[in-house]
Image 1 (cartoon, helix red, strand yellow):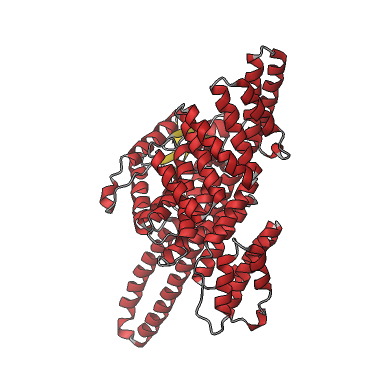
Image 2 (cartoon, rainbow, N blue to C red; image 1 turned 90 degrees about the vertical axis):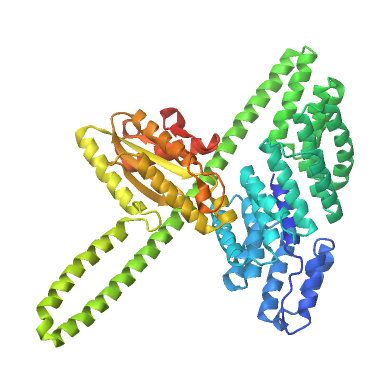
Length: 580
């Protein structure tokens, strides 16, 4: 998997290389541009040409261009940490929007390869903001390809499909970008079992990748075609495609592709009851030097060998293969779960930090307001001293105004400025007070966490004004769906919380479902666009998690994770089995 990710990264690096030139005073700009265009086709020669350029003779813009290319060539040495450091150093000095877009686009795929999720997701947010601020940048197609590849890597095919389709809709997207975007679109559509995939789509993608001379991605598309044909039980057609693909893959010699091709050969021959051929390809796959790196393929091969042993009625051998398969499945499940939890934790940390930034900005605005009010009060007090005849009226006026100002400040300190419901700080304070009261009276408290599904796609497709409209509608809908005594707050980004005293945990589950249905029925046409708003919800109850807010929040958050994991637009309630 890491080799696949690295190869995709190198391709993205080439995509970002197209027409990257500046307006500088020396001829080195042309030299750098030529190196940039030739760096994938002739990497050794291009690297030597770059090394021959005197850095001290470059302008600041050319030096940043040089730094980017130098970091790119360092990738071929295999030290990804060093490349990441180089890119971060470049981002620390450059203010050029195009260089930043290009560098961050390359960086997020490297961070994904290293599984440095939190930093990677921070860079994703930064890249999306840059793209919104620079809608005319010629590096937008390459940036969206980088995002599509990242989301495919973290197993979010819906978002990967969204970004790949954006690239394919851009008239200025070059062949390399279109090839990678077409590959991601096909793979994501097959993962989602969408009906939009047809043989014509494969043919178009193959033509683009062939013209772009991206043999590696061309093989990937052929492998996805085999998967698609297998889904439809068109085994002989899939076998015919594989025969041709194997010839290409053996020339390219990428084990990640070869093991998958051998895998498909073995399973197809089993389906066609060609058992000797199936045995041959299973053994070929298992004989690859680094087969242990491809756990999924190894599981499939042990399953093929188990079936073949059963056909031969060698049940002892079949039992051995079954045990090997089950052990690998257990290991793979644990590894996959740990990775998914790490990804979810990273997203949570990013959202939490963004919420903290919003709170600090609001506090700063409050301080400015207080400073302005203090200045106004001072000026008016001086005026009052000079107008003795109006002293009494002035004092009464400012007394009244002061009370209004204090009330306004308290409102801003407790309220989310956009949705007009409780902010995270006041929500947390209120829920802790509610839990304390409930514990004294031996009452139960339910905490509901609601998180909008695919909200980033709404912001990116329709703009932040429409995204803000959606958040306001969702907050109002939740407020209307709960009892008057319920505490409703915005916890950050697109996440909302509801806390209320209940007779038993089923009440919280019922209210969460009512909120989900009400949000599902929001008419988005009023925003000027037609799109779907759905929410995933998790419910925790003090009767299961106790009266400590951290524990209750963790229970509801785990239930919310289950809702996201098993399809979104649904409600899960925390149970002890989730923790185990």
